[in-house]
Image 1: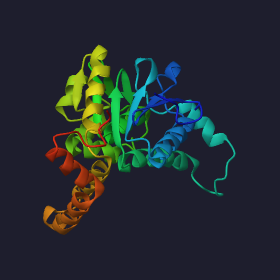
Image 2: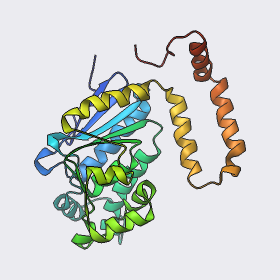
Image 3: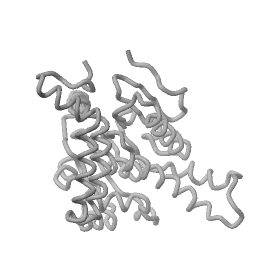
Length: 273
């Protein structure tokens, strides 16, 4: 039975069901624009999920038919004016921007699987979250945009993940033009992994979750960490490290259970029944 894992949150709706934490950005009146409080609640929800031992997958989506319209500029401006613990002379704008960067970094490095369900508007910070998701599913009517340069600012925290996801050339093009991207273009450049009719997104999500939950959670975490290392390390330099990672997994409880289940022609214990 699904049950809420956290106290009520002001900007998010959460539901834990069979090892999957569904996190819905819940400010539909502003197309789920990201306030500073939402940034903090997203980080808190992820930290709680990692510590719970009950969560294997985090699903991110937005309420009201939109994923996220980027930063809530009015909220960010107000946050700069509120008194706080900042050191004298500290750049308040940079401090606020860094909080969003830490959010992206936390989702990028989490050992949990992360799935983003992208509908409607995906801009700015929402674009960044889409880029750090392990699996990005898009509805056919989704519209992506990087509006920062058209507003006279910079997609500063998003840029590294944008380059990682779609490459240097495409990232530059999107940033300097502020272009809108439809679902087909997003799929072609590798920004998303699958596109589905809007009314088929839930079915597509169910299938992806089934695939993820059929994999061992510890093996997923170790694989994510090794793949992250492989981005910046020559393959030959990873041979010994990769062998050690494989050995720990093969001789650990998941490796023993997985091979035993294969021999016995049954599902391993981590697959939900």
